[in-house]
Length: 204
Image (cartoon, rainbow, N blue to C red; front, side, top):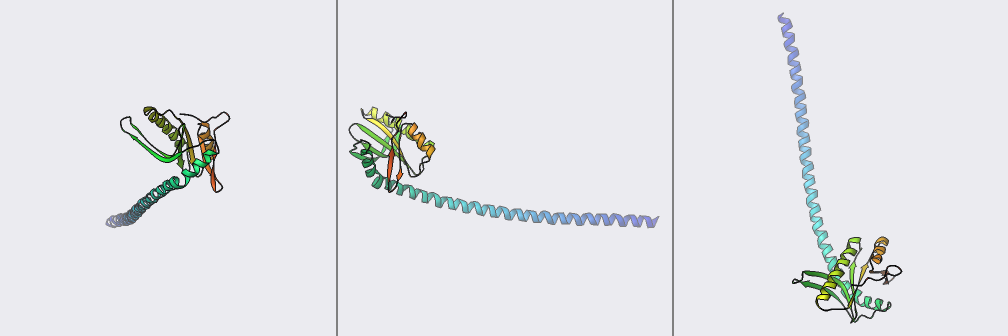
């Protein structure tokens, strides 16, 4: 009887000891996973910080590029636009970038290239790669220009154009369908496509 109890106690101890050993292994594995998880979080934080820093640098470069693009528009594109539109029968006597800030009537807009004469105004939006939203935005801009012109007794006809360094075929067709001129690179200069056939130039 005493021997049986001793054996029983021995078996119980072994089971308990095995359980303790298993628990210790689980604790070690959990500790390893926690440390690994901590290292992963540290690495993630490092990547996030590096990405944020890279985004700041990219934003700065984009800003610099935008400013340079504006300079290119002012000193290179504008004079050539006047010449190119002459080939379509337009004789513009003034060409400049324009900004309107009319707080009284809540009209605020900018025009990359405004070509003018006594009868007509051609408002040109210039983008690196125009998308549908850019084209719709320019149509809204034309509405603002018309409203501003009416407020100042400007009876001239307003026309719109979109220029793109890279012009997708669908975006080009959409622009023409909306009655706007398309300006895109061609060789060492650029060409202007007039909305015609069933899509005539839209007037504001």
